[in-house]
Length: 219
Image: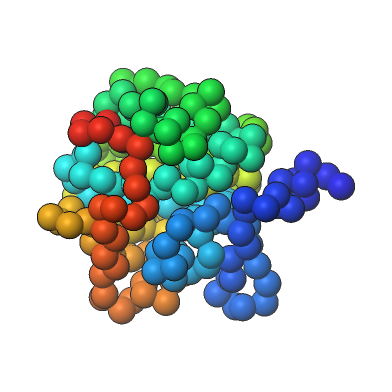
């Protein structure tokens, strides 16, 4: 059995249904049936570049990824955090079951460096998840290379972008816009495979579920 086959047989990985319904693709669990439907499968898909657009940072947007990060880290995969706006509060992450010794934290000064570093991580099959944060407009060629690296990877690739990026076309496989509310987040699919992509409906994710391993000002 190849290394990829062994990875796909891991119990932490769920297999989602593609658009044609002919089979299943690997995915890390999201912990939310509604979010699964928004993503078009059974969790956060591997081999796809997913953009999360919204602001301000620190509104609970990384809560969405806790089940995915936990499953990935506990299965032995590396977690890459590229250019987070604040230093992650690792004790909180550890309390949630995320193996912090599996986290690689990269600090970049420019978005072009963020794209390049993210691409290199995705090309290393030891990584099971990538979280990267961009500050401003991104060049389309760099996004295309990142999409290609994600498609050829065994990882879930998440790119955080400001809400203004929604006006810029993107080659990302999926784009979700989030808005912070008093009781949680509202998620809207701008591009993707989910049944809600063109419905105009928003998904409400309460702050209490999935829970977060962060403190104010950190993911």
